[in-house]
Every structure is written in structure tokens, then in C-alpha cells.
Amino acid sequence: QVQLVESGGGLVQAGGSLRLSCAASESILSFDVMGWYRQAPGKQQRELVAVITRGHSTNYGDFVKGRFTISRDVAKKMVYLQMNNLQAEDTAVYYCKSVRGGTWAPVAYWGQGTQVTVSS
Image 1 (cartoon, rainbow, N blue to C red):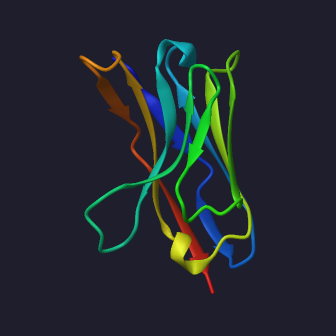
Image 2: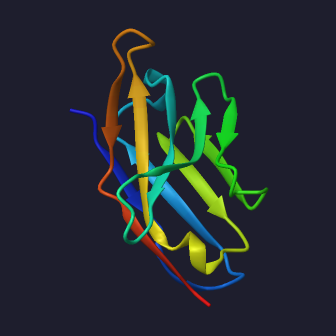
């Protein structure tokens, strides 16, 4: 069973930075894509923050606007999200997600989430 464990969340003032980490229980190259999603208070949907593919392509949510950077360390089986210039609207639970199985039979795995709170 794939396990994803997030860490690095916390309370930060507006304009501050945090780095989230996602530790995978197996090689991150076994996944087609890994990334970060978030769920804001009162919202039922999780929205894409940033993803990185096996081939190292990246994609970001429109709201990121150059403030966040996703990266990975294959040897350590880690995916990171560096978040700069955080704003109150970035307050959310941030989840690590991995997907494999291609187009026909994708299987997604989720971590338990880490809370990020930005005070204004």
C-alpha cells in the first residue's frame, strides 16, 4: 500500500514562506505524476496547487502566480512545495497526491494532509 506523509505545515504571517514535504513509501518515479492539492475552509473541492510528472514537467494552479515551486528528490523519495509570499487566502489543508496507471486505469493515492494557516 502506497503511503504519502506530508509535513511542514504551520502558522505563518502574510508575506511569509513555508516548505511542505511529502515522503513517499516507494520510488516517486513509479508514479505518473505527483503533486499538491489544497482544500480551503468551507470548500468541498480540492484544488490543484502544483504537480510534477515523471518526466519532470510541472504545472501550477492559476492562483500560484509564481509564488510556489514544486520540486522533488528522487533518491529521498520526496516531493516538496516551496511557498513564498503567502496570503490569507492560501489558508487550507494541503494534500500530497500521486497517480499511476496511465490513462486507462489511473489509481490515485493521497496523504493525510497538513494544515497551513496564514494570518493577515
